[in-house]
Length: 608
Ligand code: X8Z
Ligand code: ZN
Image (cartoon, rainbow, N blue to C red):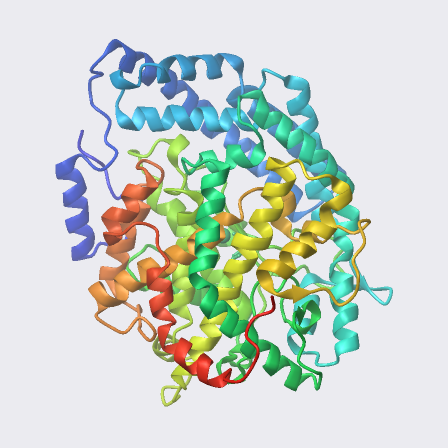
């Protein structure tokens, strides 16, 4: 079957045409045989035609309702979202759907590989709301809806006055008074207290739902999407941490001496959480003053931040975002005095698994939102690229969730490099960077400490809660054990079990057992970047410029157009010739290691 591609009116470049030709001549990576080759294939085709159609229609209804509930929290919107999700599960988790998918998968040898992938996805989707136990599914959806509502409408207060999430982040980025920092940090943790009861209920309900279709727990169900067991996923994450540990210990040491000097304090063993600019110590930004870009954005509008991000992608030969993106997205903070409550964490939505793509952000003109806007549009361009007839709605997903996270992370990494920033005027053309400062900032703000947060604290805590049924009476103690062990960070004061500091992180509530995906995405972004810098741009990975390089776009598009139609390990191998590895990441920061060792000479390294 000849592929109709590209589906959307994209800017046609020579490279585009050659890719289109390649897909046309090979039938594309996902082409289905025109005539079914076996009776089982014919039966599967029939079944999947119906399931894909029903899935896409209900996905849209459910996403429209969730969008409203996330951008304008109200009991009415919560009720509509809950009802739409019940309808979605009534279909995707229907026992007849489960039985047929299982019966067909028992005849794998008679089916096309794409069909097998679709059927496996049908079962993974069913496992989120298996109607073999409708009461359990109903309870889960009700509890998820309530939790999202508490999270999205939570009002932070500082000394009795309302404070927004952006204001919390700004205060932690700029205020140098440790007492005031502690008060802001503690205020930011109050949502956990409100979210704990719902999370206690969800621990049981999520695990119960996963067990219904034979998974041992909810964590196991989520990692099944990677073709891994819980133990395998934990081993991958522990390997990341082991391989990067020498670098992290050097960074940790350098940072604690630097911050102690900044705050006029003795050098601590562990870094106090409120000394860092990020509420969770996940990104250590703002420490390297010479590489801090915040003041470069103050004269820009929030709109220009999102537009600049779009231009990065169009410069690579991608189409402009659809007009609907600008009409339907919710990109900026709610205006002061407006009582509307919306989710404050950035996200990007493929509302109808077709061309309705939206982003929910609260963009302000600063470095953090500049980075985040590039990240979110990575999701948007992934959606746009795999929205084509050859990719059935069930497989309009990333090669795995880490690929989805990794594309925007890669572009954000590239958008933070000096030659690019100069080319778009964020930095002046005559700016003479100190390479070490920028590399150090790259490591601290977006990469290395992040791994210990993502692979360490987040992943291990969720594995404890779901795979090992950790009692809620031990949640906060365990959280801080992990923060200490993996991140080398300590709370400013004792944290009791009435608090639930894990639940202050959005994903713990609304995207459970997912966060290891960001760690994999971080490792992946360096692999892809290394390949692009060395083999496509022929520039040094630490200082290169993707701007207006369609060859980079072609390389990325070959990955993105596939969606979930090919095993992710093969996708990675085909793209880079490598398996998942921290080698590129370690090499990227290699020049920093020597510098750090010199700076830290005579200091006690690490915290254990
Ligand atoms: O949640 C996100 C994105 C939305 S998918 C903004 N990120 C993680 C986080 O903020 O915790 C991006 C990197 C890590
Ligand atoms: Zn993301």
